[in-house]
Length: 269
Image 1: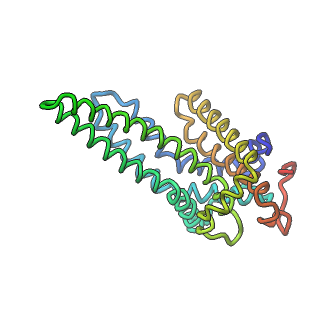
Image 2: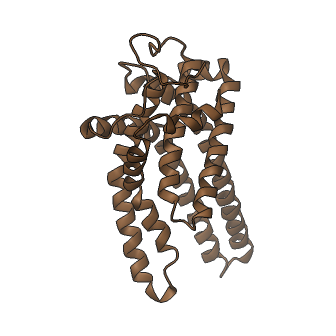
């Protein structure tokens, strides 16, 4: 995998500024939510309004941005430029597929976590209640609940990391022409891809982490104002990284060399 080539991918398109600007505009909800954190304490009602509007805008924009990143990854894998922001219906459909894949993996994890939290919070409350008449039992229940709560949170982090690792090859499978959402949940197939390409997937994770640091630095250096631009740029570079990984995991599966154009001075070989 070539990180520097992925960083260059957005700039290989002569219309990269316009396409980046549209992607940034769709991320305005994130900027509103960040701005809400800087509202003075005596104007918390404004902060709530900003967070609410930001959340609604993010929910509306998410399928389109997810769909655009998906198409950018497919274009990059085929040696094509960034996709245009024209087929909004298609972008929405592709985005729903991507979101459905992630929900299929992460939703059961969060449901299990919520059930665990409910149980341990109930134990904590029971411990506090029992402490009045039976101090020893109440303290034991309270301690058990706290330990379970912290353990559940740690387990959630581990499970999210593990599930996220499975989502990487699942996303690459989704990039295949004519792919179905069901293929992303063939755990045996996913596991085989992971075991055969563990080093490449780990390298993708490292590059993704470095990219998140770059995005964070860009946001910090602009006092938060560049957040939406940094997120849009990160999305496009991430698409290029997924394209590179897909070529490694599924050589020939995307018909890279059959009838697709080439970007000048840009390739993944």
